[in-house]
Amino acid sequence: MGKTIIVTGGAGFIGSNFVFHMLDGHPDDRIICLDKLTYAGNLSTLCSVMDRPNFRFVKADICDRNAVNGLFEEEHPDIVVNFAAESHVDRSIEDPGVFLRTNILGTQVMMDACRKYGIERYHQVSTDEVYGDLPLDRPDLFFTETTPIHTSSPYSASKASADLLVLAYHRTFGLPVSISRCSNNYGPYQFPEKLIPLMIINALHDKPLPVYGDGLNVRDWLYVEDHCEAIDRIIHDGRVGEVYNVGGHNEMANIDIVKLICHELGKPESLITHVADRKGHDLRYAIDPAKISRELGWLPKTKFSDGIKKTVAWYLNNRDWWETIISGEYQNYYEKMYGNRV
Ligand code: NAD
Ligand code: TYD
Image (cartoon, rainbow, N blue to C red; front, side):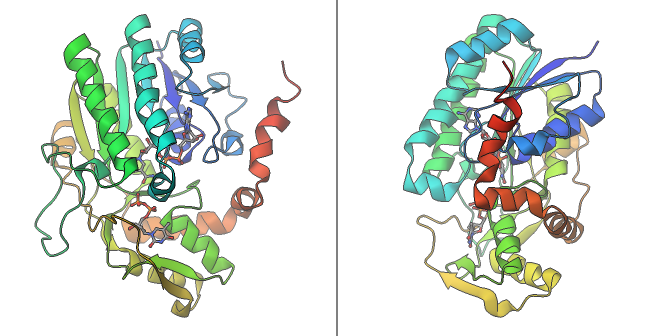
């Protein structure tokens, strides 16, 4: 018999890709997307699956205990995968409060419901940013699951706090949890405030490409589908109580990515504009994925050179998706879809 899986944050970038991944790969499962539809949630992303009998969308806040408990009583989920979060470092520097609320307290509410109603697995989608950064002149160093937590931004501090709480719920209450800490994702449906979609869209409009500082900061990029596959394996075969790092040795300096995007789009590098650096800007992230490879046989399938081409093509072929974001129209989509429904 199929499982019932609550996917929080499923109207966002990675969550929506995960919803598609699960509906394709596990057609017997029932997928319930719980999402508050913040500025980062876009219900139109899910329009192709909205009418599937084994899919349900619920607009709710993960911090709303009554709404979350009500959903558990209705759906009796077997598995919860918690993607819902405030996810943008720059916004966390401007206004940390909502990051603490959603990322920490929201995680608590979801886990309390799992304790109260019982669950097979609670999976927390975390980030490599909880490890802080690595120096640029030590390419031999990588984050492993035992690297100490050492956060830099309010965003990473909130994600690390949530991770600690998840592990505490396992140790104290025996909640069957797992955690994945993934590197930077890219691919379809990423909100255009993040590096890659922002640069693609600005370049298409011949607008300046704002590179923070010298652009030499390094990120370890993973195609979003590879991340979804990793989570799929962890929730089914990963060990309870364990952390799994997810990443694919695809390190790139920001400036090289922006140049590559200019090249792919036939735009001049003169669009690149160096702007003031991000406060507390992490220098380098790099994941050692040995544990998930060894235990679960996971390896990334998409090379960066192919993934970036696919991503640029997706943004070229799906202008409507991001144009309605830029115009703000996407935030009316829920009203249009659900305004007349009871
Ligand atoms: P996103 O910002 O694109 O999407 C977040 C989603 O969560 C949105 O749909 C939003 O509406 C929803 N949400 C926010 N607050 C909510 C709340 N209080 N209740 C219910 N829903 C709420 O984020 P993303 O890039 O898809 O990231 C998803 C998860 O993966 C996050 O937990 C993030 O920390 C983690 N992560 C992201 C990356 C990355 O490169 N993007 C890398 C590693 C880990
Ligand atoms: P981002 O996509 O925000 O992800 P994260 O901060 O979680 O790694 O940024 C990726 C890198 O790109 C990061 O080093 C900051 C840099 N950056 C720019 O140089 N310019 C930009 O406009 C943005 C959004 C990011």
